[in-house]
Image (cartoon, rainbow, N blue to C red):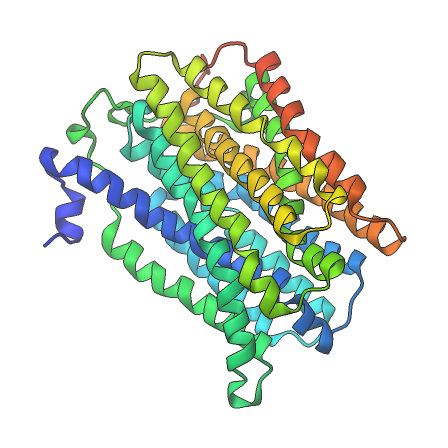
Length: 429
């Protein structure tokens, strides 16, 4: 039986198994985060029955989440680089779980907005923590696969969300509280349960036990945010994430409402099919990371392995532009599934780029910058969609824009990072 003491000092023979169990552990946290952020989109009709608000206000609630999410992505990365992965992730998960539960206490839009701000603040540290865990435990050849497993957690949470939220909405109402409030109480409680698993199971590997040339055996040196910003490679990844996540957050936050508005589906019907694109996203997470790792194992360079997989992922995204021309919900779900597959394949690879470019000591900070760029892209496109919908426009402009953003992002990476390799960055004392 393994416990904290054996994980604190793992034997060399146990390390491969521990690596992959850690990927699963972190993936579970990411699944919970995506379950939490899907609560509002899927429960929106029930919430609006008690607290009416417009499409622009709905976009504002999404933006409230994304603004603090993006800022804390940077702050969370900085925090993790100082607290370490184990303590930092614990603090972050407790905070965001309580923030999620607080939605259930909301009596109006202002309280909902405050809860969204707090939820974003907590969840902003999730992926920087995941990136640090990968950098601590995995050699470069396995990192894309590990991040694919972790990123698949986004799909698990999003797949579980529609049927689970429908179940809570239709079967609860305990203590005289509206069922939508229990959606937030129960999902927040799930995150608190995960913290027990994390604190019991996770310890960073001892430096002297690192093998296979894993860079985490090297002593850590501080790399400042200002130093990172001097490099055009940093701006390239942040810019690419800004573009591609603009599309992703549009899909994530507006797909349920698209099904309600365009096909007039009720919550049970939408929930019965709404999980399918998210399942495709999970498969994309695994395929993108595994494909890049397979190319590395076949002798290709990191530069070739990452860019081939990124290009293939981006090529799947423009098909979503055809959605406005379709009148079959089945074909619409199929094209959204293709886009979700390509997006999460892409996202897995973009999130692993910080580990290819810099040492572990600043991975959290760079991952935070990347996440901040993505969140701001989501705010910009999301607010635009809310305005368009409230002023009589269809979803067509948003779908045309979102279908092109990954290709632009891929071009930016190729232009500004002609060769993916470790950067020569001056460390601070």
